[in-house]
Image (cartoon, rainbow, N blue to C red; front, side, top):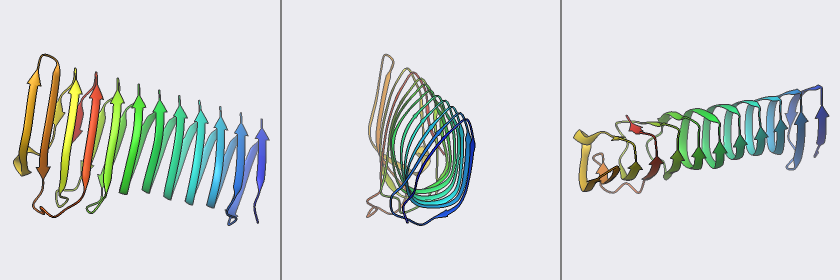
Length: 206
């Protein structure tokens, strides 16, 4: 069935929530869950650990977040530390949050400021990586077997990408701004797209 939990100044330990409409509110406490099928989660000044999930809509402030495998994740995060093992689709916004992701397999759309973003691996065959960031570095590990259309721009930052493996169609450098458009990889039929924008920080794709 569906559940609705509100925890303040306490801890919550959950096994599996298989309902399609679960709500968890956590303030000044810790929560652990082994499986969430679908949940709206609100965490403030707490710690959340979820081992596996289908869908999570996450609002968090001043918290520590650890998520294992999740199919779809929507985030609104500020002043958090965020670690994610693997995700199919992630969408959202973050400020003053450091984000570490092991693997993205399909889609990542994120607007971030004042926080480092690190993605260890983007699986080949992904659809879209669309990230805008300012005052926080961006590191993307895109497998060398992946092929994708890249458009990247920075102001007051560098763009590092696998140039040896790329057909560059546009390269602009003027005063403090840089812009690159290229196709990276061997499979010209690939529909994968990478769009990156950065201000006052660097973009690194390796």
